[in-house]
Structure formats: C-alpha cells, structure tokens
Image (cartoon, rainbow, N blue to C red; front, side):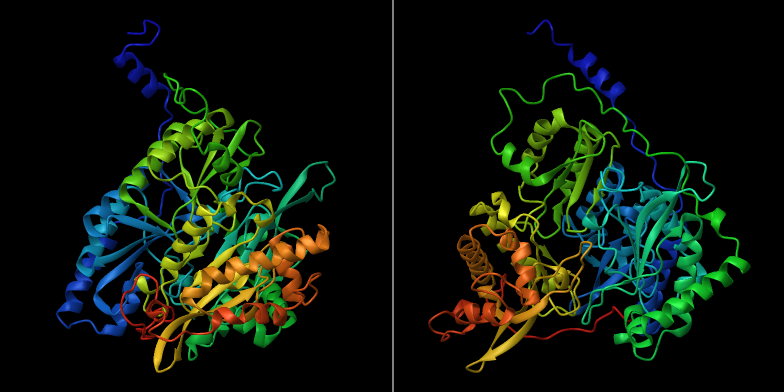
Length: 622
C-alpha cells in the first residue's frame, strides 16, 4: 500500500468536504397542485366528460405534446430556462425516463429536455418528480411564451458585453404562468445570447444581444442594454428578424417585451393558425409600421405598468468561478487518453476566465440515456466550477468552468460514459429533429439520418478538417424547421416522392444558410432521396475541395461555409459558381433506381418496410 495515499475513509471525507454543494434550483418554476390537476383532467377526458379540443389545449399548456398516430401516449417537454441544468435535475430526469419513458431523454434545439412515449396517465407522475427538483413542463408547448433560451457560452464568451443569463432567467420567471400570455395567437419565443457568433437572435420572435455603452451621466461608467431583434423565425416560411433600435437600455427590456407581446396578442390572426406566427404579421404589415407600433405601445406600458423592479437580475460583474473539488488521487496517469487531442480540438473553447474552458458534450441527434445523464451529473459536480451544465442550441450539453489542467480527466470520464464523441463544434455533429420516431407531422426519419451522418463523418475523420470548421448540417423531418435546416450550411427538410409506382423518402436540400452577424436563409437546391443524402454531402465537400485547389487557396474559397455562401449568392469563385451549377453536379445522385436493383432506396432509415407519407394531426397550432 502506498503510504503517501490517504486512507479510503479520509480520502472520501476530504473529497466530500471539498466538493461544492449543488446549486439551488431557481425558485418559481414548479407549482404545487398542477400535477394533481393534470391527473384529474385526464380522468375526466377518459370518461368522456372533457371534450378533445379543450383537453388538447390543456395538455399542451402543461407541456404534454401528442405522440405520432396515437392518443394514449405523450411527449413530455421539460422547460430548461436559459439551458441551465443542475446535477440533481439530471438525476431526476434519468429516474423518470426509466420509470415512465424509454430509458433516456432527448435534447431539443431550444434547450428543452423531452421524454418520449409516456403513457398519458403517467404524465402527472413526471410532473410531480420534476417539481421535487424545481423543474416544470408548464408552457413548454401551446400558444404561450415558450422556453426562454440563452447561449450556453453566456458568461464565458470573450466577445460578450456582459452575461445575459440573469436576464434570460428573469424574463422566464416573469412570463411563466403570467395571464398576459396564456392564450396567444400562436407560440412565442425569446432568445438571449452572448454574441452574434454564438446565438440565433435574428431567427426568433424576440432576440436579445447584450451591449454596453458609456453611461449617459458622463461619469465614466457604462450602461447595460441590448440590441433587440423582432419578427424572425424558422418554419414553413422563414424570416430574418429586424433590429428595433440602436440601443435598448436594460430598464426598458421588460417594457419592450411586454409591448411586443401585447401587439401580437391584439393583432394576431387567430383564424389562420397555420400562418399566425408573429413573423408573418411583421412581414404583411411591414417593418416600419410594426416598429412604430412597438415604440408607441412601449410608451403606454411604461406609463401604465411598473414592471422594471420585477425583472430581478441582480447587479455587479460576472461572478468568478468557484474552485472545483480537489481530487485526492490523480485521474489520468501516463498522459492523456487516446483520442484526447482530437476531442479537445473540436469540443472545447477557451473561456474569457483565464485557465478555464467550456467542454461541449456531443450527443447523437440529442439522445442521452439515463445512465449517461447520471454520468453528466457526476462530471458536473467533479469538474465544473459552477456545478451544472448548459444545454446548447445544437442538441448538445456544455460543461463550463473546467480547469484546463482537468480536461484530460474530464475526457476520460466522458469516454467511460460513451459521451466523448469528437466533432461537437464541426459539421460532424449534425442537428436532427425527432422526425417520424415520434412527431405527427414528420415525413422522414430525420433523427436517424442525423445519426448516420455523424457516424460516417467521424469514421472518415471529417471533424479534424479545418476547412470544414464552422460549417453545419441541419435536418428537419418536415418543412416546419424544428431541425433548423433553413440556417444550415447544408440543410435538409423531409418529404416524399414517387417513381415507378413506389413512394420513397426525399429531402429538399438547401445551401448557404448562416446564423451569425450576417444571418441568411439557405437557398433551395434540389430534392435529394434520403438514401443519397450522405453521398450528396460528401460530393459537395469534394466539389469544394476541387474549387479550393483550383483557386490556389483564395480567401473566398477558404472554408466550406464561405464557399457555400458564395454559391448561394451566385458569386462562387470556382467551377461551382451558382446553385444551378451545384444542382447539375448532384443530379445523378437524385435518379431513382429500379426497385429490384436497390430495394433499400425506397425505404427510410430505420425502416425495413415500404415508405409512406402519412401524417397525423399537428399540434403546433392547437
């Protein structure tokens, strides 16, 4: 026995003493009695004493979404305001997923956590479990203010003016169960970010980018505020948001938010629900008219409502990270584990706090098992100075405030849990919505396709190609854009087609989308059969490399993302200059074969049978 090693009991005691306590859950998310109310209403519905339409609205208001082709199961969507998820909450979600779901959870592109295939009568049990750890599913669905998002790098990004996280949490608290947003014309979404590079503030109803300017009193200090974008959003028809004004002071943040919400509530067309998101109203009314309405309504709100004091965000600078617990024994012996350098290059970012990094945990299309949730909880307690995780915009999780010296040990822990896939910040980590695995509106299995792309790209080492850094692949199972395909470098949204009397799954392919300071929607290229999507993407990469080599490394062909932007704009510098050129190059891949030559072509990923394009009733506008 090593005499220098502390005794087991002493080591455990020292570790426990050094470990920071779990942060307390944010107060106010859960609400006593809602689980009992839901259970009672389900009984009334089963007895025929509650009509189907009223029950659907009630169910959605409480975060239970319909499951594909059945009324006996639900998807429970758990709101994670600002994406902040505590270890105790991860452990509860793991427990609930094993007891009532499929033994795992799914992370959405809006920082929610979803439990699929839950028996309707068990939804109330999940609500009770969530309440124990301060979580709720309330208003995660329905025509309400949805989960308030915040960039997972807020507070650690070197380009931010200040940490927007407290503002996101305060906004979420203010609107949760607030009477003013319980029956909106349609769902309504807020996004906060740290900088334009790490958020999607131009692609949402209200997007907020933190700014600071010299204080108006001339005292040498600074004034906090936001750049506010309104009327953006992704869907069957997508729009980029408009900037309201140069600078919105922080004390006017809530007044502005209420003004926008009141205008949407008052003028939204409730008769045409399919086209009743706020972005349609802004487009039809015209931006200048809408902007003037917002500014006038804000003046009314400021004079009639005293709400600024209720948006409690605290004061002071960004708090320094707490020291993580001191591990008694060395975690990694003999150097970093195999694969660490590849993982570190594509999964970590240096924070503005010297000596600390944020580590992105790549999932397969947002899926995480109960065991992996428990491993994440343990890793956060051990390695994160804030002892929590942040859900990201790309179906991943971020462990922040990790000491640089501890990254090899964190990687080793993640490796043991099956959570150390590389490529988190590259196109080798595609986004894919749940698709036909659960969604009523889906036409294709986008969820499985995203996994297939990830596996193939990692096998070929494409995550290590610097030319592909910054490019994205995003996949939706229908045109509604839950997979964010409209802002992807290469985007796909599902549909169906027919050849020789047989149906087969296809995707509308788009190129050149982006969601940075130059946000732009992708340009449609062509319809690509589902089983040819991976060859098509690989062919695009091949064409890019050919053009770059021919250009001798010209700046406009420097990366796949910049090349795709040029093609989408019709200003490409190589042989592929326009979308029409790209379509001609890819056309052979779109030709359907004879059934006998390739039967698998006519089925979707994850299915051995024939393809059909049947869908159920959507609930986005219920």
